[in-house]
Image (cartoon, rainbow, N blue to C red; front, side, top):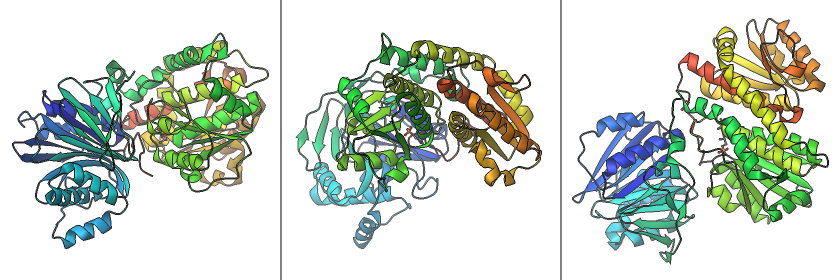
Length: 595
Ligand code: F6R
């Protein structure tokens, strides 16, 4: 969603904040803004569109040593200059940037209107700025004003706040929305994630919900919502500034697709020791002793969960249910006697999954979070964490995180199996297959040009594991190429959806499993008879010579790891050929921190 960066220190705040905002652009990006405090005065600059538009707007702004910046992904009010952050209070005493949603902003706004405040935007954020101005006027104490605010404000908020008459303090408040402090020498920072600050520092302090900070260039003071001081040590992050460089790749998505064999190798080295699963023993026992696993996730992570269910049920013979975070959070299914809840989330910040985690914790159950982001909210709030070690995923469309999630679930499933497979050997075969697919990516580009690119809609068909990959491949294609795509269980098509097939509709058949290869082929025949354009992606052992793209053989249970790469590349080339912004598709945000 939206991103926040704040800086106080000796260097030019403008350059550092703009660089930080650029790394956050992937979170949400319909407008952006920046504010500085100088000589008792707040200067605010806002612009619609990309950060580069804002950069142009402020190129002649003089050096400042204190500032806050924001990238916006619209929730309240359309993307416009007026609705962009920072928002400033009526008498220009307070300016602030906000991520999250304030539930009771209408009531607070009505009170402020009664006190004579006027508003120039439709946002809930401007209400907070005016509220703080009113409290600051009353108390003449920003700390007390923030304590009062935390008492009155309901909802999710991460705030970076500047006060016109305070040249040497940056304020930051957090509740239910990610925010981190960056620790430096001669400067300090705040940011929505470590990547926004990593060029300046790799030392961070976590901020918990309902805490606030007073940040000066030499110190970060943490307080609880009553204003009591809290001590917390900084930690060193393993995120590397070079991990977020594009290198020689034209897009992060292509870079991240290429990184997938490395991600698999990293997971093998982190989680397998002499062929045995190397995780915390207590966690292992929780998984082993659970009578049922409940996987909860959203989007791509949920698709990885479906593959995980298949693998765990096949290998470990343990029942698994997969639920969407957004549904589970509001309806607890009947729970088994000894459940374990597994949250899968690349970002570790997805609000829908977090609501579900909180529900699970309230019921007294144990939870494991599988995430790519160390120290993320869902990691901190669960009992156990397993990291995906995929490195920062910048492209909005998730690729390497999916492969990491499926790999890790395969390792867990195998550790519980009576007849385990040789994961070192089999995952190395997967890597050979992925490298081979990537080396033939021009073939996929040609397929897309010849058969997919011009279409209004498209279908992916598959059964069993291939069906789960069809869901993920369809999500990839629709989110970056805007072609309406459905992933379908090939047996189900004839029960209704076949009515949508017209002359030339592309239908992509995924075939890697011997036991259902013929079934999917007959479903493809049915759509071909209705003049669909069929494209067959098959694994060598079940392929026909005239199939459109043939993948090297892998263990049948691990076939999703290679198959999905073809789907990722189909999506990549469709978006490229249509001229869309591959890494930052419209309307989407990388980290969905609001429900
Ligand atoms: C699709 C995509 C999303 C995310 C979903 C969950 O490419 O990235 O569907 O998978 O928003 O996000 P995480 O995994 O961060 O919880």
